[in-house]
Length: 410
Image (cartoon, rainbow, N blue to C red):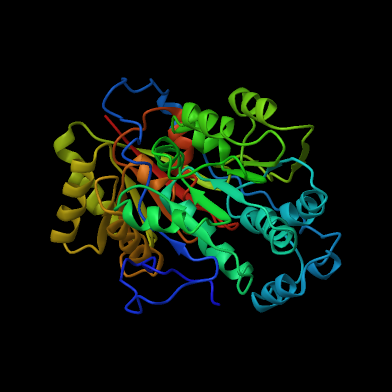
């Protein structure tokens, strides 16, 4: 049967065929992290030298990667091979080319790669292929609601017709659909740390018989403050399992987590460079906060600002700024943790489809945004830390494009 949602589409519209049941259905499309998103109201912002906000873009031309395999070279089931062919996949990306064979061999793996390089298929194809033929259960942990849903959508395509069932466990909406999906004993569970832990604590999810675990974008997960939840979840899994960790960076905290919860992992690193090298960074000086809106208005009139993300500190300030920009005639929308997951998905879809060209966002909500044609990032308020600044500006300058980042400073 088709791999489709039994309850809601990603846009939040109800499926009118309530008798429909999916093979590997992704029910329970609630939002984020059970209200656990770390608060920005507590600690003071780190001091960041203003000079760090000014940097010319230095695009680096790199040689095209030459894969050592085609997808036909991997020992995939006929159904998996068909699904991959249907998606138009012929040659794997670097992370796929170098990871799939090790995962198929049962090795624990650490994958270091930039966002947007095909990591989901890198772990999804070999893992789901094994589950089609050898059974087993898989847990995939992601830092944001949006990423969890993107993984689910990718899994639906590559596991179509497999007979596998899944549940997506993310906060922001009713627990009911998720509880119903878990009662059907899904083989695949995808979710954010807070909501997964919620289900473990209420005994609606047991991980004692899971054979695979994937942590995607581990650095972002730890940076967002989920280290304790992640450790708690991993401790619930059986010791005999295959563990896969994917991250854009490898600092001490990430290394410590992986060392504790993996067994002789092989490392595959295909990271191409530092975030920001394709991004022209500069500051916008204002003498007083009262000048900010007017200067932002003037900036947004520039035809070069084709698709812009504007960052502000709080849900209230984000909503207020988006409403003000709409009142001034701009095509703008807002995304923040105070919105329902359906609202967030609709706002993000409008932005991706260019129905709106300006998205005003808080840091936590924006971590799930992966839109390749963002031209500009505007820091209307300064970030909490330099790490947050790097995450913010990384929304622009993707797929080899030159992006622009502007930071408002007094």
